[in-house]
Image (cartoon, rainbow over all chains, first blue to last red; front, side, top):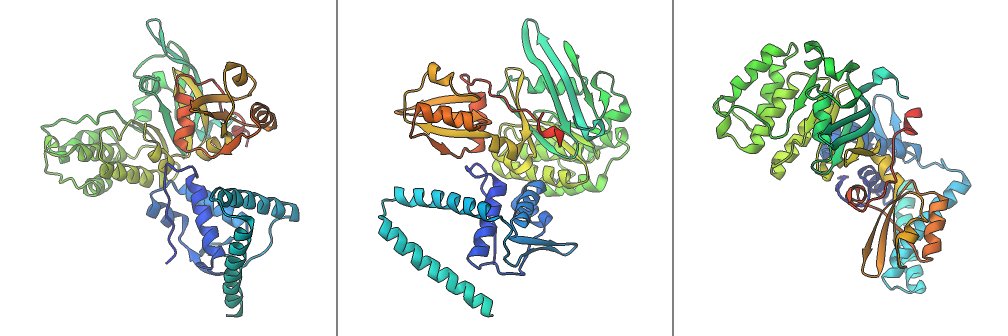
Length: 135
Length: 310
């Protein structure tokens, strides 16, 4: 079952931790299109958080097109659509790549090893996605 | 400026001297309704002095303050019943039975909520027949909180409520406060040193040091507006003067950690000039707050002035 965990005291603000985990679960298909998420109130109670923190995370995920809020019925994983301009998409990809690559390079992998690992992982993830689309 | 009726607490130029020593200097702060504001600072930074002036228990040397739109120095009994105050140390009479501690409150507060009081005792595992001196410190904190919350206050002011509590009692306290905050339009001002609890509880953070307000901002905004860098170059007063908004620098072996308020392109350029290999790093809330509270801190202050325009 999809479960969010947050840790205060980390270098990632709590609302960011929620955003990261939902995004990640959607990307890895642990959550699929149409799945419902706990309400702001439920999640705030479960995680012992100010409900505004959860609301802020959900609002950001809705703005990004990851989640959609259906009035009176709750929050659901949205069908993937492009909400960013091409410039913004590029900027976000570059930003993610910078973080990812600087972390991997400090682990001492060669560019070839990184490329191979990325290709392998990507193939696995997209295979899952294609399967999900056929279903 | 925020609209006056959206403000639970307003101070302007609030100042208090004890002899020649200023406990609070020119504090101007608006605390919005319906939100949880955490007040953070050293012991002796002026937090308790501030609270006592807000409640009209201590006159200011200069300046003024308002609670729920009324001057603190002339609060009517009616306004007082709308404000809950949890003092440091949770004072209760040891010889009383828990159920009897509620009696006085019931008589004073017209909106006394007995079912809520009973539910909170249960939540903290306190039997109403127990004598106050027999229950644990955490349970005493629970009884204090129950006594305050059951008066159904619009505004709740807490002075270091978690002091001396074990982790279980601390968590119960945070849960109790969150449940209260979820009710419509309830305002909480909490003084605490526990930054993990601040992260769970607060919408806003105010940092006070040496009687002065250094930060007043939304919690998320505060973290976005405080930046951390690590540089490998020598760093002294001359370099420090070149960085606008520098809050604190801390030397660690060959490296120096910098904390900067509101870094813009100019700041980034200044840092890059000092060290081409400067790296930006994400700060924990604790790092960011400590930078402001260190004795060496310079004042790159952050205020809500911008945000209030919304």
